[in-house]
Length: 120
Image (cartoon, rainbow, N blue to C red; front, side, top):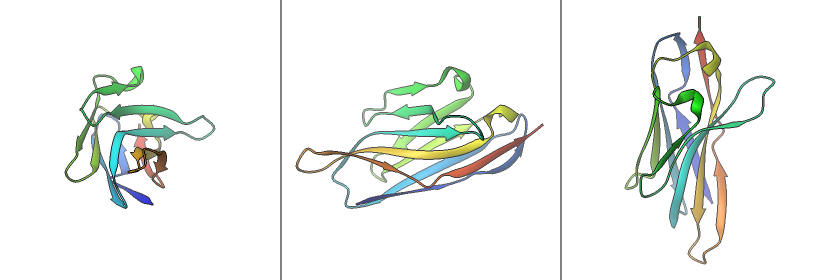
């Protein structure tokens, strides 16, 4: 089993910044992509940003130029730097990891989520 623990959420004013962290621990063999998803009240969960083990990144159009995803493979940790936050960024942000077992089996793991609230 792999556990993902997020931190860094909170309340911030519009235009402000927050940095989310997600640390993976447990029986890790190899983690491919890691990513951040978010779900606002009454809306479906959406991909915010993802990063491969080779540091290729992908962003939702709504956050391009404002958010930056990064990772530290040695620490099995992924980060999301969020700048110029807007009220519409308010959501629960969850971390995802694409884990590969030694057998080659792929597994999806999710963190419990951290709430980001942006006030206007």
